[in-house]
Amino acid sequence: MEKEVVSINRERLCREFESFTAIDSVSFDERKTADKLKAALCELGFEVQEDRAGEYYGGNAGNVYGFLRGNLPGPGVLLSAHMDTVSPGTGKKAVFGEDGIIKSEGNTVLGADDVAGIVEILEGIRCVREAGLSHRDVEVLFPIGEEVFTKGTKVFDFSKIRAKEAYVLDLSGAVGTAALQAPTLISFTAEITGKAAHAGFHPEDGVHAIEIMCRGISEIAQGRIDEETTFNIGLISGGEAVNIVPDSSSCRGEIRSFSHEKALAVLEGTREQFRKTAKAYHAGFRMESTVDLKAYQVKRETSVVKRFTDACGRLGIPWNLIRTFGGSDNHNFLLHGIDGIVLSCGMYEVHSVREYTTVKDLEYGAGLVAELIR
Image (cartoon, rainbow, N blue to C red):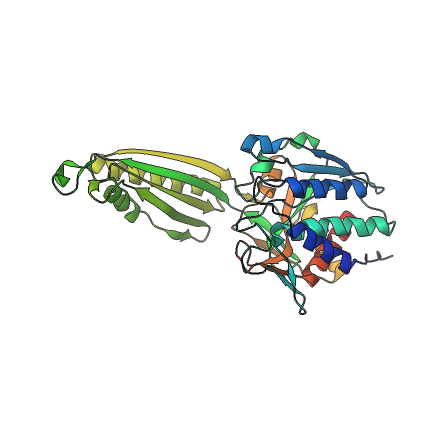
């Protein structure tokens, strides 16, 4: 016998989206969002905990975790959406259009990244509970600091998690899209040390750090290195005044690749190029790097993928399995033995003041959550 499809309360869903987006919740200032989430989870019957992750970063809130016991046999499921937004994220207001599109007023982000995921999780669970329908054990994790290289889940105690499957609602595009693969992301800072001199009287006595930095950069390919790797130097600085040969210069960049080994090789090649250029001009050189995210690929035949495609099929939502060049908390889930995939929650043009979502996407997303926990 086919399962009954859960009916989503559109008006309540929109009100909740509006109320969450109205909260200022940029990275490490998630206190009000955390409090609102904890109250909503308690009302739904969850056992709720908040950790002290914010203390590691000078923030005012921790990761919010909840457990809800189900009445279906078998393994539980973990659902996740992050609490923080990017800037400009202060004074947000959701504007509902007659066409069903929800935008900001145009001077801030909307915050659909990731409020859309938050409210879809809450409403999907709420509707299943209200209908008295059976469901799996449900765990939820709403992290802080996702937008700054998933810092919240980097310090989360994963021994709390019982589920072995996770759905992270944090992907752009129409509901029904899921990312099974994501890249390694390495950030780096390179510094050249030269020698200061008066630029007018004795420029030949100086060692021009900015020139050396630029020569090093000019020897490094930028942009798309190959079909699975990108490289970008996005910031460069140096010097103290226009009449002084600069004795220092630094640049910051990132490497992304679906191959972790290739990303490391590109990093080492970058280091060697800067070292060689600095040596040729008798300058000093140092470089620091951080592996912010490690590449993963979830196989299509795993149960976490099959449950997703089956749920989409029951709802009549076309599904699409892709790879993404973005990061998410799912990187950290997989590092801790949890099979996870990242689901689109219907957000578009994120990280810009043009960000928007639609009422229909929110409904579809909540309906999908309801199916996944059943």
